Length: 127
Image 1 (cartoon, rainbow, N blue to C red):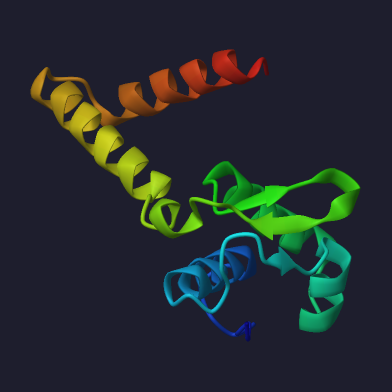
Image 2 (cartoon, one colour; image 1 turned 135 degrees about the vertical axis):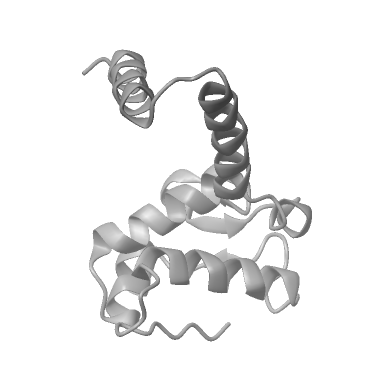
């Protein structure tokens, strides 16, 4: 699997990494059970910060594209092929768009929506 990161791109580095790993899974360049490099190794190979690679791996694990097995390493998830097509960001945007449209139709101002959203988000994260 060949990964190349474009530091000049407007797309965040972690997103580029996520997209390229998902694409490699879809193109069957990596298969379920294949081991991925460690976070440190991939960060070194790509000349990236460990935290950037770790963030990409967390998102891929959340999406069940990869699975971390402790000290044994990180592997391609058995259902990775099917899970690569799930786009949680797209779903969130769609849901928020529908909700905001409902609020606007009810006469709620954008300022009120922002304040309420921030309040709810802060309450749910314990901030």
